[in-house]
Structure formats: C-alpha cells, structure tokens
Image (cartoon, rainbow, N blue to C red; front, side, top):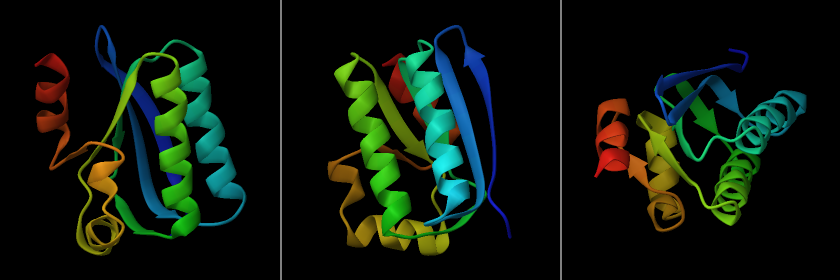
Amino acid sequence: MITETRSHRVEPDITVFEIAGRLSLGNLLQSAESAIRALIDGGARKLVIDLTGLSSIDSSGIGTLVSCSGHIGQLGGQMRLAGAQGPVAKVFEMVHMDRIVPLDADLAQAYANFRA
C-alpha cells in the first residue's frame, strides 16, 4: 500500500492532515514531511495528524512526526496524533510516543482536547 495524504480544515483554527498506508523511509516520507511543514509554515497552529488509515510506521516515520511536532511547538502551536491502531499503536507504545506528542484515540477526542 502506498502512502496517501490529504489535509483539510475542520474548525476555524484546527487543521487535519490524514496519512494512509505506510510511513517509512523513502521519498513518500519526505513528501509527507514537506506537506506537514508547509501547513505549519502557512499558519496552522492546531494540527491533528489523522493516522486512522496508517498501517505501519518505522523509525524514520517516528522521527518525522517528532520533528514536525517540535517545529510547530517552536512557532507556538501544538500537534496531536489521532487514530493510531494495530501495529502503529504498538510502536507508539514501545517508544513512549505519548511523552513526546499528545495521542488521541480518534479525531473527535483530538478536537475536544484542542477546545479544552
């Protein structure tokens, strides 16, 4: 399965970036990172990465998410990860991703946490 991405705005100030397929070393990872950074540099300060359709992730994918989270944090924003399931959720658990980037079970929870 190839990596597919798309973004949209949900509320006036929340941007969602969807990733489906695999997030692993390669050109597609670089494209996804460039797209996320473009959203951040374009003014997104509440960013939810929707991982519902993500089937696998490797250390390069983890590094990309951590890097993008740091980038938005430096600009006064926050990134949340939502919908990680199966193997992706297990990898996040192993690397204690919740200590680095806030994790939400689904998009609704991510939106609620931004509103709180």
